[in-house]
Amino acid sequence: MSRENNQTFLEASIANIQSLYFHELANLSFNIIEYCNAIFKKTETSSVPSYILVSPELHSKINTVLINAANIKKLVKTNPNKRMRETENQFQIRIMRSNTLWKSIKDLNINEILNTKVRNSIEHFDEYLDEWLANVEDYHTSKVFMGIYNMTFSAREIYKNDILPIRLYIVSERTFYNLKYTINIGTIYDEASRIFNQMQKYNVLSEDNHVGGLMIPINLTNQLIPE
Image (cartoon, rainbow, N blue to C red; front, side, top):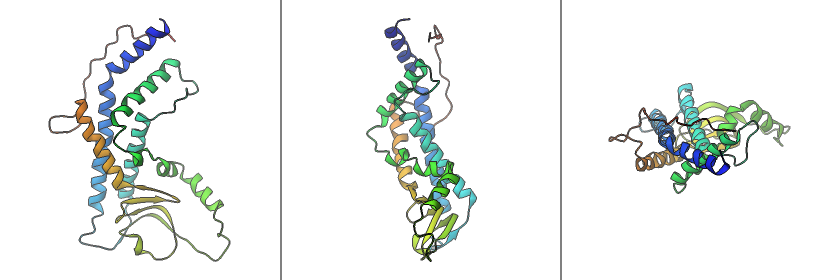
């Protein structure tokens, strides 16, 4: 197969299962919306305006939101360089898939979803904590930080002294802190909602705007692509 014919074939292959990629994008954004709603409900301050909460379940939900956000980024943005041990066809399909999905949402402003610094600091927590400790210039002085680990504050003002936020969620800001990195869960919710609504244009949602399963015909004729 010539290079030109192979390129055409790859493009046709992507087009053949394009709806599957859009369903995945809708599903990831839907998951973010659902988990964010659960987080916001769990941390409502109407009845108790000022509190400190310890809830592994809540932090697990926040982590799930960050994982889904990172997976959206992997779908729509990718390294333009060929990876080690990646075949040429795999490389071309990855680039075409990413470009197709990014084109569908590029005007939505999803900068917070694309920000994976907090997610990385959680996944490689030990390394990031070591780095922070190694670079605290005043560590040898009398200045003391209170490490706040796996906790939720209704508001930043609830604790007056200097703190080191280690997986700390501030309800009034809807912001999650880990060491020197922050991410706004409220903004992620808004961005995921825009992506989910955008997916209506690609006919991947049901009539009542829900995601679900998918049965998709995949044409396997001549699918053996020579390398």
